[in-house]
Image (cartoon, rainbow, N blue to C red; front, side, top):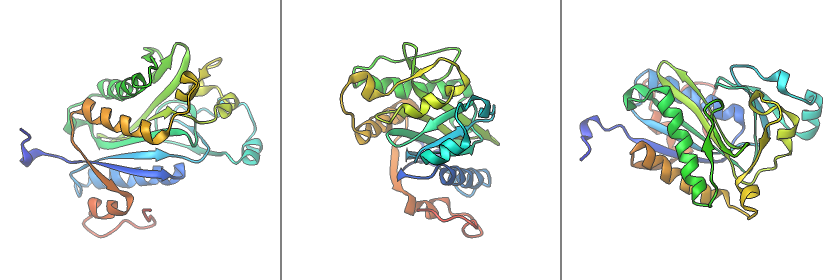
Length: 245
């Protein structure tokens, strides 16, 4: 039985399509609230992004194989991120999952945490008869030598944010414009490509949420962006220069 005195709730918050820059700002706001102790809660953001290349802490601009003017012409943004890793691509048809919580409170070290995120994708893919596995040298999940999901986290004062992405039915063409995760000759795949069947992102997201809860041994509370203002409850009112929704 859960000891309610020490129970820290997990809020699952869905967004349909959000600019990467806005999701990054939102995560920073949650991290700040958790660090100040104004919200003893855990959050997991679920959604998708418009087309964007993100550069991790290890850089990645050298692994962009096209010009920035080409990206502008194609309507693809370029954004520097605090997460680990090199360059990667996000776009519609790829699910992103951003857990924001205290690793210390959950008694997780970074290695076990990343292992857990990979396990969620492995179990989800198995529901579609897709066999994926880990690669000890390159984190994420793989179908043989084809990458299907990526992990990239950031940690600030013990609070983890960013997370993982899983390719469902997105266009894979933009991955040809980069060396994915800084690796030359790496192929990227999707669940739709591996099964040769149309796969709905909402079905995959439900499974990811199911296995997230199972792997982390939690009971999620489903909430919304509009309720996040109240959940964060900063002591001196809302933080300036940001509006949720």
